[in-house]
Length: 366
Ligand SMILES: [Zn+2]
Image 1 (tube, rainbow, N blue to C red):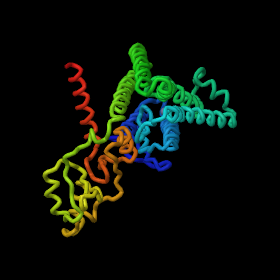
Image 2 (tube, helix red, strand yellow):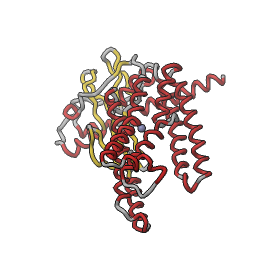
Image 3 (cartoon, rainbow, N blue to C red):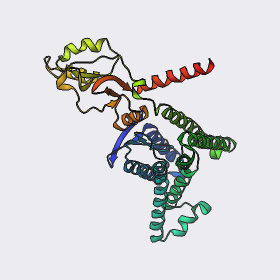
Image 4 (cartoon, helix red, strand yellow):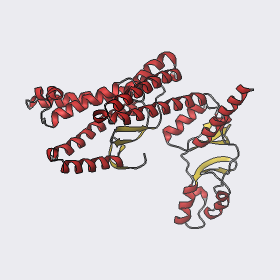
């Protein structure tokens, strides 16, 4: 995610902090100093602890996703909550339900742990009654209720909240992914409209709901487009979408002379062919780095990657697309009977989809 930087790693997942979060902390520091009533450091400590709770919530989603074979690229903490960036979405609705439910489940577990700790210290009553009494209570009641709120809010069955995903998963088992997504998106957007009016009517207390409403409304719409895109490309054979006119390099070509090919090409990645067979892949960046760091007589064969993934021309596009997401590859060579026949990239799949949609529209007009 843009405007974020890494603060650590957990279970191999980079944890990132969004810059707006730092702004929030600065803002709180300044307001605490101005505001004679709230000058305690407790407020800041609370914010940091709360984000620890959000992190636990996102980690729980992520660990469940990893168990279901989905790669998690990073977790980013934003002022409105956390986002776990996953390589792709689960194919099986049952997996989606488990991944979505894991976050709120963790929030409730954390709440229970805080309550248990509070009881040990003799604060059980204070912790449970905090929303009614609201004295200048300590950290524990606030942490307990924040986790209850985090779990419950996310369980609202409105896409893209966790509850919306659980709902989509349950519906998908009966009416299929695309229809289920339409329903879940409809619920999500209706919920966003309600939130918006609640925020607008009680602006002074609930103004933040407007922001949440916009986030939910747009997020739901994006999800619908994404699912429709996936279902439209799912069964198309890779050969129908692949790029068939492309440039390639030879392993014996020296790095400087390979620039003659790069100069006339828009490709970012090049297949390397030895005796007509695909031997490796090399990117424009690989070549430019080698140009700086290797002697001029070095050849493409020395810098090409042999660990590329490839796909068959008859493979369904949906499968290739998922594979590219999971392996984080931008370009995949397409083989037919061992011979390189084309290249697929995310751009190329997008172009294919756009053109085939336009073609269908034109044909339905005719
Ligand atoms: Zn969640």
